[in-house]
Image 1 (tube, rainbow, N blue to C red):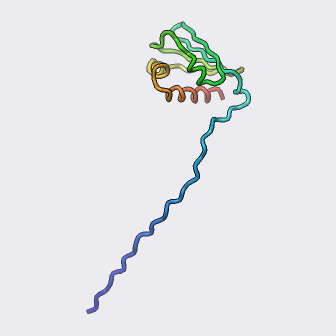
Image 2: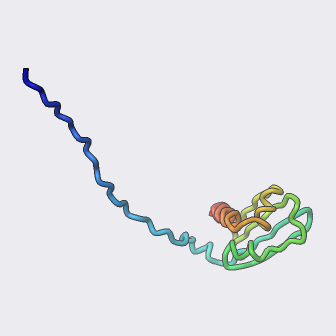
Image 3: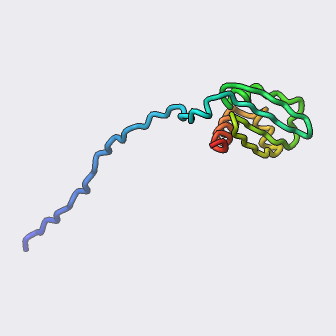
Length: 114
């Protein structure tokens, strides 16, 4: 009897191809959104107002005496107005937390203005 050789097929390995990388840039604002932004923060009857060229700049200028309660933040730009209700946890992370929460709030407020 002759020995029969088994033919073993090797798996085909595909080489990974590099995908093009997207370049992240600042979002392009509509012409009407390039004017001065103003933010007001209402905390239990106390109102803090600031103005700036960007939403983040306005948030960094806000310095309320107390931030340990619920609040309403209002953003105006030209004729547009956006309001957002903030819980106590959101207020704490906005004024005492890291910068990431501020950036998320900036993105949300910017989307509300469109």
